[in-house]
Amino acid sequence: MDFARILEFIGNHPVLILAFVGTLGVLLASEISRRLSGMKAVDPLQATQLSNRENAVFLDIREDAEYSGGHLPEAIHIPIKQLPERIAELNKHKDCPVIAYCRSGSRSNGAGSILKKHGFENVYNLNGGIAAWQKANLPLSKK
Image 1 (cartoon, rainbow, N blue to C red):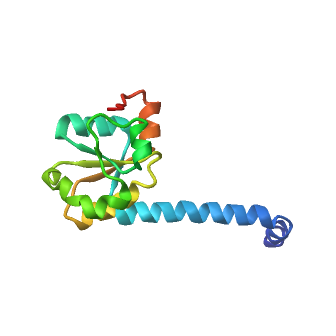
Image 2: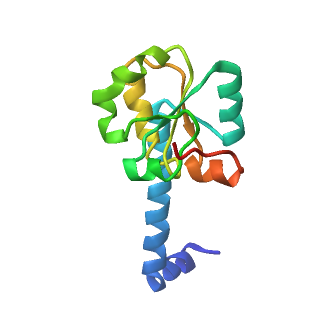
């Protein structure tokens, strides 16, 4: 395929090209954000292993209504907007792995930079969020 045909394709399909560039931009921004947050991604199985072997703490950063609809058992609930002011509630868990999660795993990336800024070293993001947890048929609590 030569360069002239590529330019012709771009000229004939501007909406398709804009959608491609936009999607690529969102994916790159998400990946850059994840890397800058200092969080490592874990899937539900790895998160369960961290909980069982290293007493990992689950941090639910979703809003109150989302949390009351179902959450991981024994999760600490601090909405992401309140995390900077309520970080002291997590200080007793500084030596444990902290696994932050939201609905899909994207909002919880932001928790990583906040936790790292306050001295938490072992910070993880539940890849896929609570949706991945449910898909793996793992238990939820509504207490």
